[in-house]
Image (cartoon, rainbow, N blue to C red; front, side):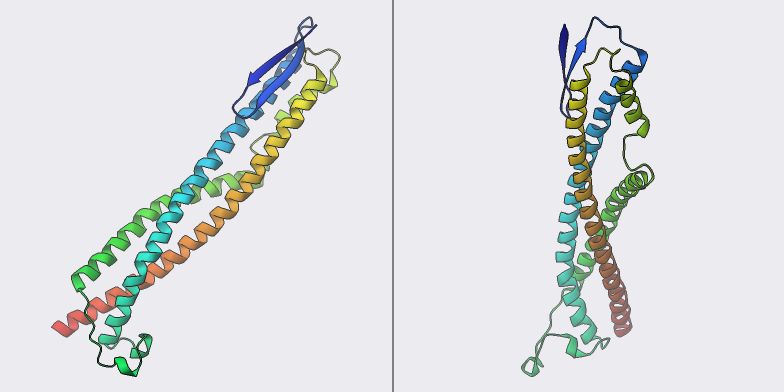
Length: 232
């Protein structure tokens, strides 16, 4: 008499049939434990990937904000550099009719904007570094092991098939359950690839923002020095 046992795992429902008249062997118990443990590991990894993807989305919002906030800073720098003779007037979007255009920049507000942007960049750097470290550690592990599931766990499950006439578990249901698990596992691997591509693109975008920001902070320092010389 076979008994069906249903386990509601958060990753997927595990359904196996057992012949409880048989005594469970240690090899079978180790293999079934491995089967369940692979579900645990994959569920944990799925949740981690989702959580880190969501964090990257939050970082992307901040990156886009800081790119937007940098635009008026760059425009003010263009005008200040022309005014101070650091750059040629051709950098400004004016034509001959605009030669007498007056430029009014609130320097206090300008410096506050630069300081605010710089602080935001520093704060964001800590967040990006934390995410990059997780990303690197994860894919270093994947490069080395190719999976978050050790081969030994698959081997433990395979041992059950070698003694299929002696075990409690119905091999047909175990084989079906393993195949269904592999389908879910494949979906998590696919999502991992989506996460990887998104992370690489975002890290590159952040690096470009950081480089662009640093260039403008240096420009601000030069403008500040020129203004002090003019006032002395």
